[in-house]
Image (cartoon, rainbow, N blue to C red; front, side, top):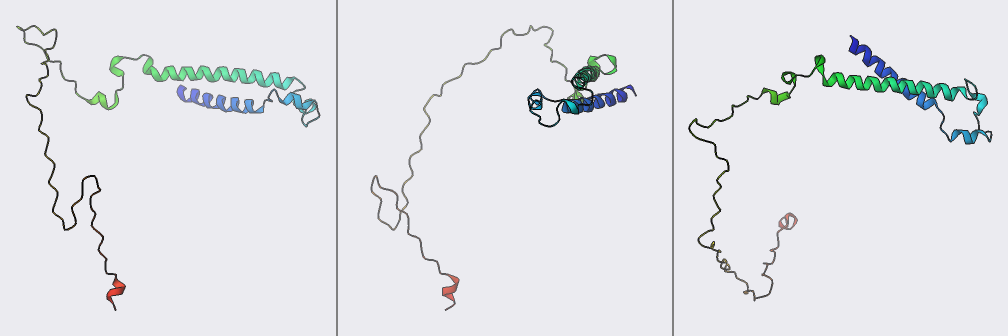
Length: 165
């Protein structure tokens, strides 16, 4: 119940702070008011300087409330039920995996301090390189060394319109 109340105050302070920030005039608005450009000091609701002080103070205190609630909600989310225990940590799908026991060495043997890695052995002979393939027999003239391979000429295809005649 308290969490719902805190969330409502959090959202209302965020909305109110947004509205108050948008209502305030920027520092560039004062320069235009001296030339009679609409709105000047006569249009303020709280007097000549009252609106700036009221809006800035209200925005300051709403920001304090907003950040305090933000910190409180983040602390509450990271510490459910008052304190975080190792058994209460939610691991998601990894929490469902069975934990395998660590392998243990036999009682009479001492564990090796450094692993023994065999040295890589060199191959006894060099790998055989396959021989180039013999050219296929073709009806065209053989290609000379350094020239491009011969490409057979395309054969004409009978179109359906020519076969109807």
